Each structure stands twice: as structure tokens, then as C-alpha cells.
Image 1 (spheres, rainbow, N blue to C red):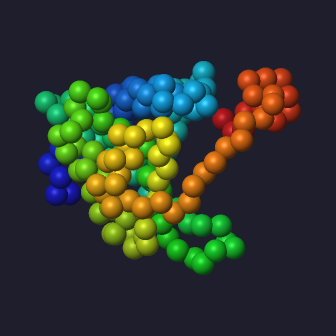
Image 2 (cartoon, rainbow, N blue to C red; image 1 turned 180 degrees about the vertical axis):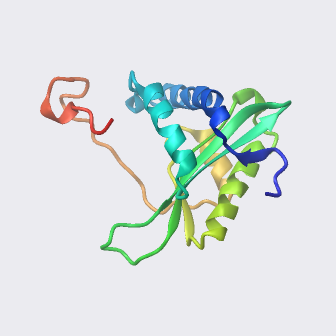
Length: 173
């Protein structure tokens, strides 16, 4: 990989990348409290991380500065629902660099590593989501030539915050 500060994550990186992932979730929650972090979010991360490392349809890259991991990107191979034209895509799940290590090109290196993987597997495009309230991320993605494809809107229900209704039960894990 031609990015000296970026490499694929390894099993020994789990705790550090998990800590960064929790920081990402907290920053997103501060930007928009509708993004609430589940009490067992870290447990879920710890459960899934080893599986992602072994799954060839997933990639987790880390970036280092001063000999320590300061950021990561996670992505997975994705395809649209069968009602659309078949195309292989990569979905960039998360991109995070610690605030004190930003503006040094590390996020761009992580994105380029994901782009290279996207090209190697013959995927047609790289897809991602950004919180609407995250102006810094929107600015960053504009420098990466990212363009809107869809816009996700939400309408808050009257029962927002109520946890005892049938629709609020956890899905998965």
C-alpha cells in the first residue's frame, strides 16, 4: 500500500480502534442527539471486530502518528437491492482521526486506501453517509470529490424517547 502511515488493522489493534470508534460515536452524538449511542455499543464492537478482520468483504485500515494508532476507516463490499441494476460498491462505514491529529492528511490516506481496495475488487463506486450537522466532515468529503446521491430525512415520532413500545426493541446482537 503506498500510504506510509496506513495499514490494515490486526487483531492486536482491537482495543485501540475500539476506543477511537467510541470517540467517533460520542462526537456524532454531540452533533446530533438523535444518534444516541447504545449502552452495549462497545461490547458489540468487540464482538464483531475479529469477524471483520477475517471477512474478505470487509476492510479496516488504521493510521498511525508517532507510533500510535490515531485513526481508522472501516468499509465493506456492498450491492444495491435487487430492484436496481447490479453493481458492486464499497460502503465506507466509518472514518475517524483524533481531533488533535486532524489536518495532517491522515484521513485522506485512509480514504485513498479504501479507494484502492474499491478499485482492486472492481467496485463501481464508494458510498458513505455523513451527519448533516457535521460541517467539517461535509467540507472534507467535498475535497474528496464526494457528491450527494441521496438525502436521508427523518420525521420524529410523537413517542420519541419512549422505550417500552414494540418498535423500540433492539434488532440483532
